[in-house]
Each structure stands twice: as structure tokens, then as C-alpha cells.
Length: 540
Image 1: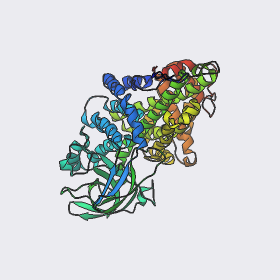
Image 2: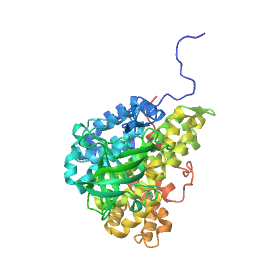
Image 3: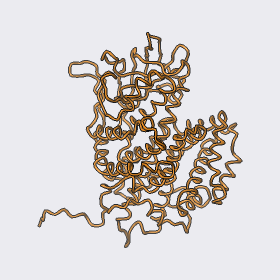
């Protein structure tokens, strides 16, 4: 007989929702304090409580209702607009209101990049898609400052505004603006020097004609674009709407049907005599845009660390509330080994991400130049297998869309592809070692801070010393070299800052010969239960 009462099914975990996403990530809280932003802990906790509520559901809705391209209005006029679900707008507005697109450029306090990193990761737990326009907009500011001060003076107040103002209108009519990016073309991809889009002088600007194969955040108000000017590849700022209110020659051919990142729009575009302003000198397009890329690569690391954390949170929560074969899953030794193994990489990614953010705060160009490329390669590359293993911790439930793990899994390869794929980042590491030797010295100095505190780390550092500094002939083994650099960096950070059970297990499994290629192969005697409990959200 029906009673009208809703009873939770036996042996099912409670929903992982309605909690402080920031404060329940203990490694992130500790990193915030350690890397110079302890004063912002209450701010981050308030944002964590906010993101742990409705935004979790908004993330689901934004992915189930992806953006739609509207090329023409009902009268047949070309409009080239992207229509988003209200959940997307709510999430993006949340990010803009809290300064995730502009915080280091708006606030002069110490630790602004670290604070932004923590906030960016926290919102990314709820939904990763809005990270794209937030990241592009944030990274555009230093690029404009470096290459076009007059443009920066005009656009920076809009790009750093905390008012979310969607819709295509002239910049003078907007309370806030977003910036996208359109670099790559069909024939070249990451080899942007092969770009064919042409730029011809026109009054106080240029006219651009050509195609772009990947345009990030095509609903934005302006775009940084690469095109071939008379003196070579050059960077430009292209407004979507001109000062007189007419639409610029920016045509959206189609939206990409992507594996993941479904809430966010990426497009193929055609530029038809589109007006744009030069940023930096002609022929210096790559050098100009690299300032933007180094910031967006940091955000790739932050985004992947957030995906990893969300996957670990889901796995540790589920197994802590699920019984099988007579006892809790989380108490069974083999499952504990798997969970602890996942937690190690999550903590390592978080420690790396916030240490990188501090390098940006301190304007430590030498360290950030090399460490960002190293971390971008490894943290992003290691994300898909971790998410896959976390999914398996939920068994068949993890393979069902409602569990959120399938969405995370589809999202997980993306940051390794964006802003230079794995090979591109590894070659960039070799280039930095060769051309900027001071970056290698700064990287080595960071690693050496933990020398003598763990035998596995010491042995790995000795191996790395033998392989570095020369990059000559290193290209075929660049991935192995960069992986070793990344693991040594993570090991050094954990030995200095993490509980001994975490650092000892990480160094034994990742730097020694005591771990296997699959998760769940930590050696005997590690403090698996303590590691897992450190990472489990205290919910339910």
C-alpha cells in the first residue's frame, strides 16, 4: 500500500550535493594557505558552498541542452548568433560576478592568481564548460597590455567588469565583455605559421579574410586572431560588432559536435573583410599571442585538476556508503588501494596547479615558463585514465549518465588537446630548455628544495640530472623526459607539503619501482585508509 513517503533505496549512497566544494577539498585548502592566499579562505569557502548547491544541477542542464547556432533571423538576415540554455548563462554569470575572468587584473592584493586558481577549480567542479570563455577573457588582458596599450585602455574595463552582459552590441553600449580566440586553420592546426588568413591595411586597422577551423567561445564580443599581414603572421583584436552597430564580417559556419565539453560552443568561422586592430608588431604574431597561451595553459592545468578532484570525490563518496560482500567498499583492501592511488594523483595535481599560480603571482617568469608547459603536459595527459578508474569504482552505476562520471570522462581528454597537444607542449619544453636556460635553473631549484627527504625522489632527481640540460637529440624521448620532470616536481611538492603517508606512497609508486601501470597497484604497507579519508567529502 502506498504511503506517500519517499524512502531512499537500501545500500545506495546519498547524493553528493549541498556541501562546500572548496572546504571539503583539504589539499586545495592547504595549498591556498601555503601559496600565499590564506586571507582569501573565507571567500573561497563561501564560493564553495554556493557552487555545491544549484550549480551542480545547472551543470547537468547546460550539458543536456547544448548551444544551438542561429545563422539567420526570421526575416532571412544573417545574424550568426549562438543560443545557450539559461543554465549556461547562470553558470557563466556566476563566474563573471566572482571575477574568475579578471581577478588578478582587478585586485592588487598578494596571491590574486592563487585565489583565482582556487575559485576557478571550484566552479569547474560544478561544470567545466564555462571555463573556456572565462579563461580566454582573463588571458586576453595581459596579451593586450603587452602588445596594444591603447586597445587595452579601451577594452580592459569591459573585459574585467564583473557584470555579465550577453548579447551582441557595440562595445560602447556594453557593461561587460568576453573575449574568444581564433588561431588555428584546417591546413595547419597547431602549426599556426601555416595560416592563410590574410590581413590588409585599412584606415586605422586591417581587413581580414579567411577561415578558422577552431574558434573558442564564438558568442564573445571580441577575438584575438592570427592572420598574415604584409610583414608576416600577426595578432589582431577583432570586435564582433563595429562602433556604428553593424555586425563585423564574422560568419559562423557551424558549431563543432564535440566528444565532451558539450555545454560550451566551439565553431568553424569565416572572416569576410572583417575589421580588426593590430596587437603587437607585424610578423610577431606568435610572440604576441604566447602571453595569452601561457595563461590559458595554466587554466588547462586548473581545469584538469578540478575534473580529477570531482572524479575522486564521487568515487570516495560512493564507496564510503556502499556495502558489498559483507562490508563497506571503502574498507576492502583492494578497493582502498585503488582509491588511495587515485587520491595521490589528485593531490599531486592540486599542489602543482597552485604552485604554478604562485609563480604567476610572483612574476617568476623563469619558473612559470618551463613549469607551466611541463605541468600542462602531464596533469592533463594523466586525467582520462584517472577518471576512467574512478568511474569503475562505481561499477555499472558509474557508466550511467546520472552518475556524472560519463560527463567527466568525455571532458577529460580536452585540456590535453587545447592550447597545444601533448607533443606540442613537450617540444615547447625542449625549446625552453635550449633557448631560456634560466628556466631550467629555476625548475631545478624548485625540485632541489626537497632533496634529501625521500630516497625515491633523490634517485629520480639524480636520473633527471643525467638527462638534462641538453635538448639535442631529445625529441624522440621528449614525452618520457617531460613526464619525469613533472613527476619530480609533484614529488618535491608532496614531500615538502603533504602528509607523509601521501608523499611516501606517491614517491614509491611514481618515482620508485613499487607501483604498476594500473591504478590499485600501490605497494604493501602504504597508509591507504588515511589517504582515502583525507580526500573523501564529509557528506552523508
